[in-house]
Image (tube, rainbow, N blue to C red):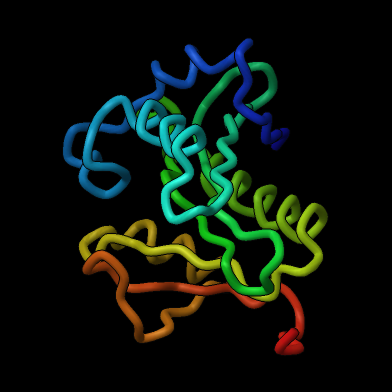
Length: 160
């Protein structure tokens, strides 16, 4: 399966606004729709001082989803996945797993200091919990914004 991650740019940003999940999934991904609008605003505003880096998920030439990295590149453990979703028209085709694998490879390659990649998942989103567990993410026991935190170790943490 050919999946690519493409940074959101002035050439493709408006296409990301047309991506959506089903109404019952909306609460799992973002408080407002379109989801990409919230994510793009975070890239501009930089809440928490982090860098917010939005990516379109492509299957061949077709945009099928969205994912965003929030990070503090000078750290080893402040790397978070936000707003990850596959458009409702393209779900259940393996794109989510392929995109997650591609994203993990991207973070490993572009951010060699990253020791842990983290995310939060809605406690009722069992499909996402299974997906993340199958990719090696494990619950930390902590919560953030009322949702459990999962993490994936990407390298040995040296404490530096």
